[in-house]
Image (cartoon, rainbow, N blue to C red):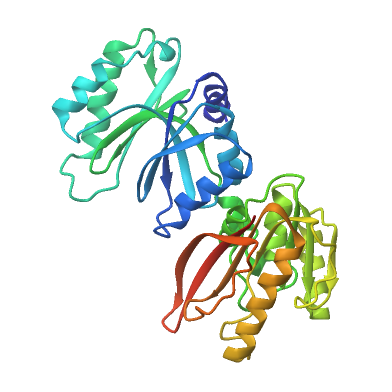
Amino acid sequence: MRLHKLNRALCACFRVRKLLLIQSGEHQTLPAAEVKAVIEAEGRDFKVCKVEPPIMVIEVDDAGICTLLKERLAMTLEGIELLFKCEPDLVEIERSVKDVDFSFLEGKTMAVRVSKKAPSVSISSLELERKLGAMVLERAKNTKVNLRSPDVVLRGVLTKSFYFGVKVFEVDRGVYDLRRPRYRPFFHPGSLEPRICRVFVNLARSRKGSVFLDPFNGTGGFSIEASMIGCQVIGLDIDDEMCRGALKNLKSLKCDVVGVIRGDARRLPIVEGSVNSIATDPPYGRSTSLKRTLLEDLINSLLHQSEGLLKKGGHLCFAHPAWLTDIEIPSSMTLVEQHEMRVHKSLTRKITVLRKL
């Protein structure tokens, strides 16, 4: 608890310039895309300096971004305010440490943690932790080591380069595990995991107070994650049982929701121009009997319905099989990004994000 409180204080008082994000590595492109989407959704300024999975470096001038990323991200593990970057060489590291002003450690306890993200690097992370700890103690006044409950965690990350800085936040990924489909009162096979649902919601540039729609709501996975970030949530499904089950799931997690509507996604009963973001996963996997032509019609219908429902600047994030390439992007929408995700040997999911012009 003590460390978390201090990290919040560090986030608030440091004028963050460069932030190193350590990401989960569960996908090659989605973690970095999620970071960009979350910051863009809030209209904050930032610059991507480097993307080298599983790390990403961004430049920001708003320390509040730390809190935003901590609360919103699903595929990032922690954030570190960079003090320096150098070659992964002990001589270079020692030279760089000498240039750092460690006065912010005065009167505090600290610990050094080093992780290796590139197996080809020959330096031992444990050896480097000890050396860095000794070097910092030489330069920091009235500072002690506390490995169990330090006030400040200094983080080193070994990749093709060496990054060193102050840990300013850690994402609590355990909360997503508590919301897994099998723990909800209503379960149906094929439900996406909460972390993936959160990524979809984030890629749709959803934000607190905005209107969010999932036109293929199913058991409510996307609606749950949108509610968790404070969206005004509308879920729609053609199946009565799914609608009732989704409501059970939403209520069990104390989610605020505008409504779960029984309806056809091809004829959405929603006022035009009233929705800020749409994230959805139409039926196309092993558990559905949709034929190829029907799926193409369904996806294209979704796109044209979304064109009318979305406000200017609103986003649609949806999934479809990678083999489905004949997608009719409406004239008033533009392609933002696409990502591929392997589901099993016979299905690769493509995640597509469109923006209303």
